[in-house]
Length: 180
Length: 353
Image (tube, rainbow over all chains, first blue to last red; front, side, top):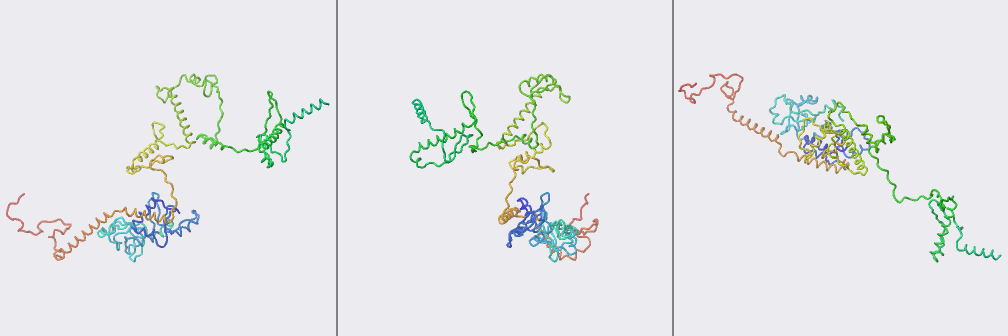
């Protein structure tokens, strides 16, 4: 478990602020203990200090993962969020999208959300901002990037893409072996 | 008998002048003949020492010296030019050095390489038989240059060269280059042994045609050689930075950073929070996209409301076929369908074409 380098920390935080804005501070500044980000094989893990100390007793070769995987750094040094980060992103996300039950399956199979599947959307969602996707019964099922603002959505035609798919809970089954 | 007594007495008197060569010691004196060293381990007589210090010490020294000389006389002697010579044995006593052991001379780069590869120097004969001259020619030094001159009275110009080249000049320049290179290497070795850091200046240009990597390196260095270390230089679409051994050090502003120690949890939290603050403060105060979208949204809402207000009383009239300018249809407009307004247009008058 490596400490993230300064530029990598910056890249990670920049990505996280796209989804949860100022609330990233709440991830670091927690009342129930110190939490930190650690890196192993380009994957970033969100881990409590207590658990980290326990993990350090293991030989690095024998340790596969510890904590919650937030995502990974690509070979071009960009950060990509994994669906495993959803539990931490969903409660803090300022911009949300609710999909109709009919469009849920489409999204969970890895497709973008089109206008016809849009149930509700947070007011004033900016373009290209990270949004968390909910079902109509308020269960988070993934996240993506807003392709249109809320205002533009109103006038978009039914087949226009509203949210670009990035991750969904279906990945727990679809890409089980690459998620850690 | 008188004579005998007289002689004996004289001898005794003579002997009294000199002290005896046999010395008695309670403990045997430790003698190292190789170092000409005698160390007396017997106790000093404190009473005598107090009473007459100098006389006592002198007597003691004489006795010990006597013992040492006795030991020397036991060794085999030689005679050379009226002097008696003794060869001393190896010294037994270990004497510590006054100065540290000299360090071995630092190896030159070639010596280091040869050592690692196991290359040993082959001894060459000082003289070599020259078939052409039919005589022995030294490897270097006296008479070598003369022999060389005699041998190379004529040098052929190779086919691939310009026929007008001066081969003698070429040979001389090659030689001077070799000398210069050797001198440079000597200085480099010297600097390495003295641990002096030599700055690497520019690029080593060995020929008039630089190769691709050299050019790449030169371009990368030139780019980074601005006041802002090349931060604002334009980039070609598929441009890559030069890489390789020693190139990193040549590029300005590319000094390797030392790895920072692992921060404590508190420190790390502080660092993370400060970084987050810097990221969050960087975002523009007014999101232009958002502002524009909001403005458009407001306008649209306003317009639609206006429309609703104006249209609502006329709702019934809307269904009338044609007659309304806002009713766009795919059909081509035709004459005679519109309403005429005779009051608007003066009916009289010639139709102008």
